[in-house]
Length: 153
Image (cartoon, rainbow, N blue to C red; front, side):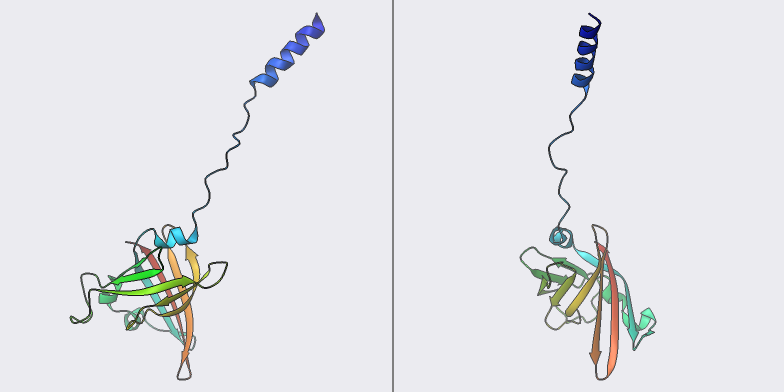
């Protein structure tokens, strides 16, 4: 009888254990989904010339900081000039293209005609709240490094 009680007790204890769910947790958000989820607006833009940082007032005008950048799933990019245009004759929106340029999706190529927002960028950060891009380019013997941080609009 004692053995039967132990056996029934063990069955009751084992039967009371809850099995973990077999379902996978929700998958991580893809880099494409993070990039295309919302328009982005620059919060800081830093520029260095041959390794020497320039004051931000020499880098970006206030009229550029209200621009938004909407990356679309079809690889188009729409740049909206925002409420303050730098030049009143500029179009309100311009359309370009974007693409990840490697399998790790940590490099981004952007092409917007007649815009300074062109080239190959390293993605330093990409989350639902931050997009940080950096690029280094040479022109006429000078090396420019641009580091731009964007937040959701």
